[in-house]
Figure 1 (tube, rainbow, N blue to C red):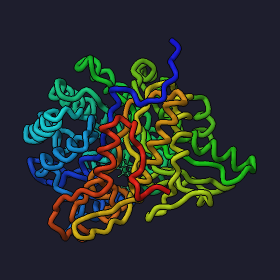
Figure 2 (cartoon, protein in one colour; figure 1 turned 90 degrees about the horizontal axis):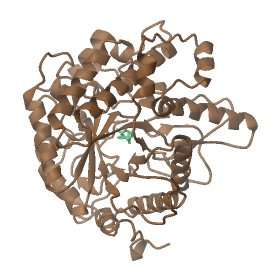
Figure 3 (cartoon, rainbow, N blue to C red; figure 1 turned 135 degrees about the vertical axis):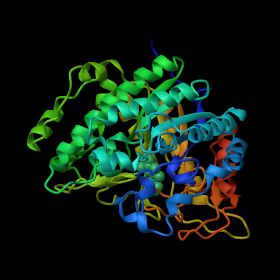
Length: 477
Ligand code: BG6
């Protein structure tokens, strides 16, 4: 059917914000919770040695912003901004502390019941990531993470438990956060801690295969248990441009991007693309598959593509492919401004990416992470964060342009509507929020919540369903 031209955000557009259990909840050992991977990193997931943290006295990820106890206060503020959706994750280890228990932990299940009830009280739909860098440490120690096929039934059981428990409350699900980061950072995505002498590429792609199978099994279960739910895939898709028009740079950039797109290619097209065979051959990768795996992947595909977009970068000839939590990281682009953390701000790149993904997959898109991490200054209890308002404004204009381009977009979930622990470096100083949280990198502070200027701007945007994107007078350039 021909889709009509539109200039407006759809009426049921899901405006909101996104977070992850391990970055907001705290309560790391409360309610029978087990040890999760992130709570055992030292300086954030980019420094992932999970064993080192056992002896630490203060660990910022363990109390975080105490959402575990303050969720009512925080959700009230989200409701005041008019949120229609709030994305967070379920901490796997609150439900199955080691990942292997015969019965789930009731206290953990009860916490999410209360949390979802609180969201629904304000008509905020929960959008739930099943696994956001939070796998049980036991599964890393015992099985080497997703290297082992044993994780598939354990994950299935976890999914079945939460689908049954929350079937009346949660209708929007995501399987793995940023699954395509397996190619860059398999430690925190798949619990793949390198072993001496191991072929790393073999470990990455074997584990990825297990996760694709688990993803399809979760889709099957979700449809059986909650027929009116939608279950999406989530990938990290900040973009990368060739640094110049040297065809070698252009080709290598395509190759780099395709290593990321490989993940949604499998999950949405339902088969392994032929280009991967060459990469596997060149790296001695031999992925073991069982009978029925490929049929399962072909049959159970995700229904929407959720993704994070923070920035773009550029690739120069011969540069190694490297990435962090924001996406690929190459050379600076002289045409773009840069954030306090060296991430380059590129709203047009957002529109470019939305068009690229829509053209390639033709499934509804949902940007579930987009935001600016910056240093904020509190003056007389106020935070004048014009830079964040500008970032948001420029990206929302780009989003609206993408709608005019014909891209189907379900909603927009800003990353970090409330300040939280940065995933990459475990800093509080890298603040994304519309709501300030009084806590510093050393754990000092009252945890008091304060509205920043961006709070009112986002409220205005949501109230007008994206019609009033105008910047406040003082920001007009
Ligand atoms: C994404 C992650 O990669 O980037 C989030 O899904 C993370 O968990 C976000 O917080 C921003 O990265 P950082 O390191 O600034 O927190």
